[in-house]
Image 1 (cartoon, rainbow, N blue to C red):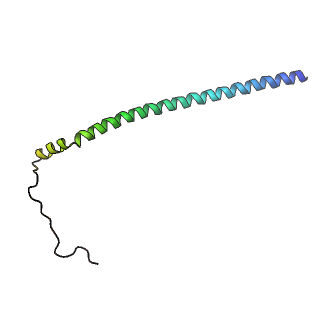
Image 2 (cartoon, rainbow, N blue to C red):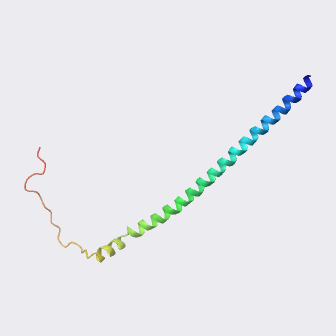
Image 3 (cartoon, helix red, strand yellow):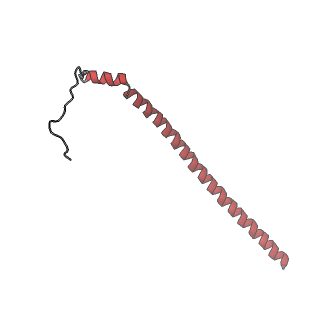
Length: 92
């Protein structure tokens, strides 16, 4: 009687522990896949960031801006005028 209860308890414990191990393994595998996808996405975003940074540097360079200004027919100012209003803009 005690022996059969002990055997039943041991078998039940083995089954519960096996199911627990199965659930933990499944969760680890799922988490691992999620981490892998996030790492892949991070790599892609880093590549895109590097590409966009290079493009910004290219477009924002002084030589490129000067070239675009010349294409648009812009010239350097030879004289700068400073205008002052005759009446105050804001009254106290």
